[in-house]
Length: 362
Image (tube, rainbow, N blue to C red; front, side, top):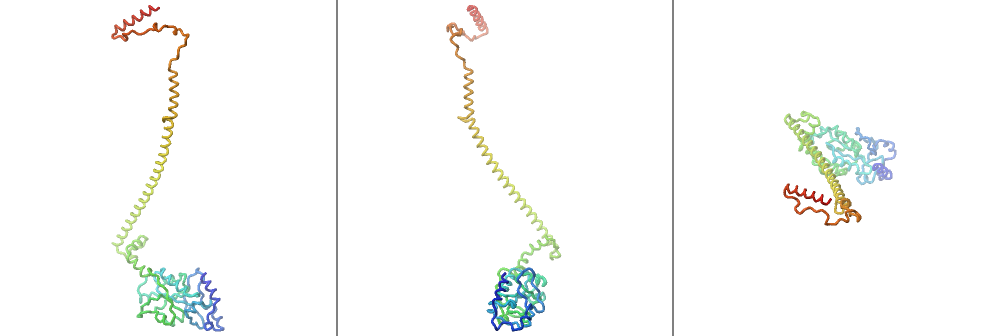
């Protein structure tokens, strides 16, 4: 969307008359200058012998003019070069800045070959073909120049119709020069970008070297052989033993986590059971007190039944007309004063006397 809006804005604007294309050359220029990419469905193209086959003169632009905007058929061609080994976010942010320097910018990225890089800088992790492909799939790149020169020459600038060169402003000393971009700066074609601190190819390689054992063990575990990793027999056995120890630790940790989870569930269920037991206990005690308490239903029922039993067991009053009602109290038999007898003979004598008394009454 930003590219489309930039194209629309550039169509409304025109460069000063001194920088307009000469009359009669528009047909020659049609479809000869690549347009900035408006979609991200295809990777960037590789540069041909010359990526801008314009037969008309390539008018020089100032930075102020480029920032005002150019016609759609005349994008501002910005060049950024580098090694781009282990392509990372620092590279991408630098290219993003280069792409967005001007409203109608076309970004060309030069990637140095393995031969030049090994000669002037050092060995790379990725091959040149891998680095070319990594750059092609960056969203900010419109075109990739393979086997780019280490030092930018005037012929190279003319060949690719480059308007400006983008790079960070720190002097880059190499190939016997204190700053390989010095002549670009003097020509007014240099536009600085900002470096991203904390990330670089050297930083990534330093991490790998520092934690070499970790990454060697990692790749052994993933199926790489000791020969592929250039690891000795002893180190291979040591790394494999360490991997087994780590797996055992992980299993123990997993068991501990599961045990903790199980204990937590048991504690949670125990808490629920205790809570339910307390509720049932209170309910049981309440029911018990309601039944057997001082004013409970059981006491009332017991009192009622006791009253009935007492009433049933107590002697009833004799009626006044009964035969025993007129008997004199003196006539009622009473046991002798010496009862009970102190010996069997006395007991038999008492029984005989009682029987004689009964005969007398008759």
